[in-house]
Image (cartoon, rainbow, N blue to C red; front, side, top):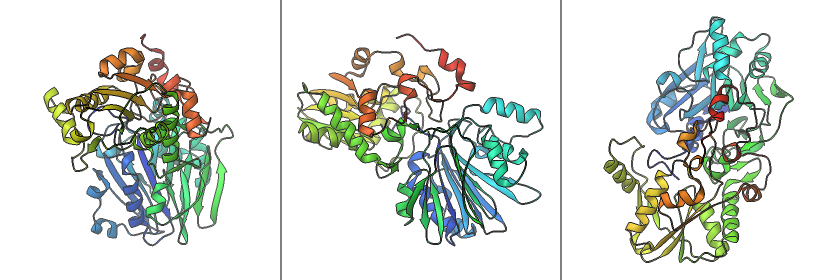
Length: 467
């Protein structure tokens, strides 16, 4: 399931930071480029030379926002950066991160991956106390809470985050320190690594490879790690901590070469494909085809276990620009064919097992099946490497209502008929946890078992439609 039309999952963003390296801006650029899959709407970097801070942020991809002259201008030995997809707040420049508070004395910057689920109440409270917001992003709340808190800067961070609920990986940069904060349930990934004489922090470990950094550890749920002139500080802003990594990080969001809580994403996805094949003893097929790119690992696992050959029956055009909503059905159909092609000589006259990571609205899956059958495929048996998504996500994924989720309205047989598939099966939650080698997952989008209180989303979750 990839970005070739409107039927995709988007995760809010990715963060990357560098502490104490003369090439901080360039390294942050490379780190953000490795995290580009986590957000394509905007990018930004803030740097500090120990005395002064500089910022550049724009809408667009990392390579569009930053050229060599921009990075040279961002002088400094510390930096934080951000790539963004908007789920809370619009895509206006005011909401592109990092967000920078230029104060009478010093200043600080914040970048945030995730969603603050009590944002409405916090913003209402802050506005009543006189805070003025420049944008509509929930991330701006973090700036105001830190600034209004009391004590040392670390104490301010503790006080601020003790009021915040939700899913988040946050970086905070002052002129001489970098702080990394992870939500109390561990929903969003965040790790740090050694880098020459300094450190870097990233949403995903894949970014450490491009910067030649050596992984040290994950930021623990509810933990604050400070990199300061006095050394590294590790503390917590709450004792109510637990591990509930978002299952969709393994299923779709993270790059295959990343490690999440010590588990390689490619291997986890491959095992999910193998388990699906074990459960699929009655399948009669000629080839296995994965939807590029996030489903490739699961497709390899399915093919290996079933001994049905894996083939590149679908090819993704990597030179098509970013998606926009096209005005007519005909143009939408043409857009799919521009971004994805069925290889007729491979799929014609074949019975195909089509592996995809998930189904959201169903429109993409339907069009892919049409592409394969138009190219001469006899049968297309769809296998989904995750359970049906039946509940809205409140933690920073852009499925905020039941209306967006086709599995909330249709059972498996109805969905199979709608897609035009010859059969349809999903991985169940038990098998998914077995594949990912962990029970410590948030599966709320599959089973409605939210790991926090609902806060601002109570009324939305209560409006579950009947199938």
